[in-house]
Amino acid sequence: MDKFLFVTDLDNTFVGNDEALTELQQTLSEHRQKYGTKIVYATGRSPILYRELQIEQNLIEPDALVVSVGTEIYLDGSDTPDSTWSERLSEGWNRDLVLAETAKYPELVPQPDSEQRPFKISFFLKEESAHKILPLLDTNLSKCGLNIKLIYSSGVDLDIVPRHSDKGQAMQFLRQKWGIAAEKTVVCGDSGNDIALFAVGNERGILVGNARPELLQWHNENPADYRYLAQKFCAGGILEGLKHFGFI
Ligand code: GLC
Ligand code: MG
Image (cartoon, rainbow, N blue to C red; front, side, top):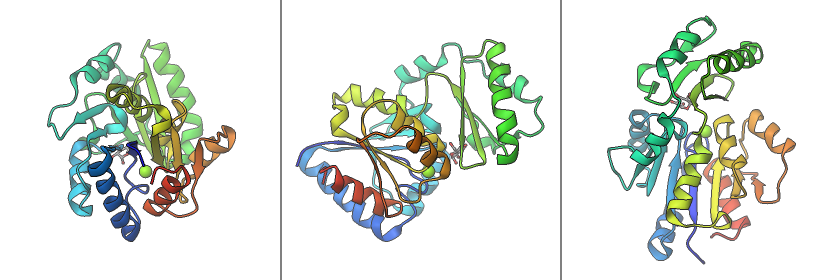
């Protein structure tokens, strides 16, 4: 057994199958203690909603926390986001201009204030409107010279973030910082905002058995032997995948 970098989404991936989560957390804690394995949570939640979930589910402390779909990275329990990462994102980002442009679309319903972050603007958008609105919005925001990315998840959540940020790029920032090879890294997810984790490079990937259609569709269109579609759901699927790749 050897040290590896473990990166996981939280809602409906790490969390959602209590019995398996208990086993997974124990396995990961032991691995970290014995071999120095690194644990990273990569969630769409803000730090506020992350904290709620952490308390509710008694989640073990990660070595780094990636929140707000990759736009904020907190290392070793720090309260301040990593400044190197924030500086990288601030280039070409214009929050006010994005807000002015998006206000023109009545289909975009703002998410709660807690989920509006320095580098993330989030809306609810119904699936039936998404097909029409997303390409239109992308074109119009680009026309304004905005260097942004649209991330649509679970048929309801739309996040607008700087182009150079998502869960995948945040994961690679940490992987390189810690000098861990892609082959020794595993990423886990279930929905649209996790596609970036799987798509950014050739890190090992685990799609949990309850993965959402948008992720499954992407997986089917981009097959790779370093990615594993589990049968079991949430933490059960993660345990299955970690064994498949020989990490545990
Ligand atoms: C979480 C966040 C929300 C975001 C969604 C998808 O639910 O709270 O703001 O839109 O993840 O990334
Ligand atoms: Mg999820």
